[in-house]
Every structure is written in structure tokens, then in C-alpha cells.
Length: 421
Image (cartoon, one colour):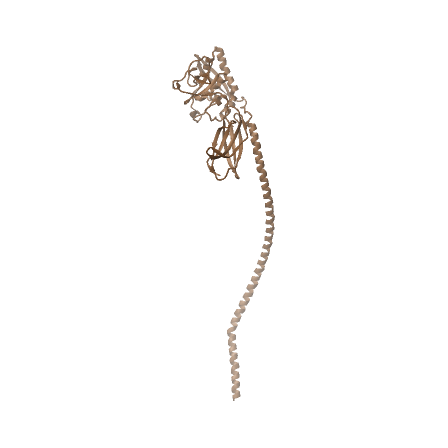
């Protein structure tokens, strides 16, 4: 009995355990399947990742090769760049030296060229015929002049000299030949009529007085525009400076001793002619008798009422150089390179002049001064002078440029705006 009970107990335990196990299997198996599926998915992902990794590894390897190739190319290019940069530096230094040499040679050439007199074009080609009529000695006179257009154009292009000494317009030598052709006509009249020296002078002045009076402002647009003699003849007149200039030029060519008379707001001519009477101005012990060149009927020594008791400044007819200049400047590194163009608008060759440039140090003092070599400059010519200044640092200053006479004084001066160095 006990044995059966024991057997039943054992069987019950076995059956219970089996039932429990089967229960666990029923509960666990889905989990296992789920895990197996995850494992399968992970294995698929790992396979995919391995494939991607292999692909990226290949790309990385290719990029490494490209990088190495680029490094080699860069190294080659860097080497070429260094070589070219070295060549550029050397060539730039050579270029700067060549430019310096070129500037020096150009300046020397221009100096030589500027010292050679400039002659107007040959008096050939087209001419303009002008006819002038006037009355003198109770008789009508008329002359015709063929004025070469090339000569007129030459003087028309000439810069106006910045001076009140209008003798430079009288003494310019390039119209001397033509002036002689004009006075031959007056000499023929004087010889034919048996005129005295005073009558010959009055004949010429009467011709000048017959030229129409024109205002500079109206005819040229300038308040003051002195004309060369050829211009006055070609333009059919001028103002008091113009008629005084041509009268002085003609009488000077006829070997009379002539001065220009500058009065307040007016200009006239003075002639030294012993035995003459009337109003005169003294200069160096000589009496220069007044000649009015505007209006008609005025004779030697006749002075308009408004100028009686009025002093005059006398300009002797001397050929003189008159130099003007203009300039440009640019910075090159720490240097200031100055290009000065000098022009001779006078009536004589300038000899031994220099260009001087520097920075204003205050109190009429200069610093960092440079001067050119002496140069000659013929009438109507220009020359370019290059000066290189090395300004001292830390100053508020301005550039001063002088054209200096051989005796040491300046004849033309200019200034820049103020700037900091």
C-alpha cells in the first residue's frame, strides 16, 4: 500500500514536472524565435555593414592615393612657384634698373633736344591775303600782306608767357623774316615821299592805329590775351597791348630804339628819336617819346589827357627766357617720383637752369631736397625732368618745386597740397 502510494507520488512528480516543462516550452519558444529573427536581422545588417565598410575602405584607399598624388603635384607646383617667384623678383629688379636707366637716358635725350632751337614750319603752303587801308599825311594808303597760315598757327599755339614784360612777344625771333617783308613796304612809301625819320614813324603808327580795337574777352574768352604780331595782323586787330606789341616789333625791326610803356590799365610805345618834341618818359638818360597805338590821328609825343602826370613802367626790348612748369608725382615704395615738365615761353634760350624739389620744413626751410643737373632750353621747347625724393617719416608737409636761375633765384615756383609722410 505504501509502495503504491510512493509510486503514485513519483508518477505525479514526473507528470507535474513534464507539464511544467511543457508550459515553459510553450512560453519560451516565441521568445527564442524572436531572438533568432533578430539574430538573423543582425547578421544581415552586419553583412551589409561589412559590404559598406569594404566599399568605404576601397574609397578611402583611392582617396589616400589621390591625396598622395595631389601632395606630389602640390610639391612640384610649389617648387615651380618658388622658382618663378625668384625669377620674377630678379626680373623686377632688372626692370626697375632698366627703367631708371631709361629715365636717365630719356632725360639726357630731352635735354639735348630741348637745347636745339625750334624753327616754325617753312613759310610755304596756304596763305591768307590781308589788305589794310589807312590815311596819313592827307593821303590814303593801302598794302596787302600774304600771311602764311603755318606761321599764324605756330604763334596761335604758343603758350602765353606769365609775365607783364610783353617784350617777349616783340623779341621772339621766328617772325623776324616776315617782319622785314612788311617794313620793306613802309620803306618804299617813305623813300617815295621823302619822309623824315619822325614822319616814317608816324606812317607806321598811323597804320597800326587803323586796325580795329577788339576786346580780349570778346575775341578770345580771356581777360588778358597778348597776341604775337602775326596774330594781330591775321586777326584784324586787337587791344592796346596787341597794337603796342606789333608797333614795337615793326619799329624795332626798322632799327628804332623802342620801349614798351605800361600805364595804369593801358599800354603804349616809347621811341627814342632825338630832335622830336612832346611828352616823353626817361630811361637810362634817354627820352622815349610817347606813341599812342589805339585810335587815329595821334602823332609822336602826343599824350592823351587821362595819362598826363601819370607814371609809366618801361620795358626795354630784350630777348629773355621765361620758364613755366607743371608736374606730376607718384609714390613708388617709400619714394616720391616727380616728373617736372619745363617750358620756355620766352624769346631767348634758357641756359644753365635747374629744377629743385623738396619738402616744406617750415620757416622757409626745406628737407629731403633733390636738384637736377643744369639744362638748356630753347625758345618754345619743353623738357621733362625726373627727380626721386625719399621723404622723412612722420611729418605734415607739402612738396615745393622751383625752377632755378643760374644765379640761384627761382623764376617759377609751385606747391602741392599738404600731406603726411
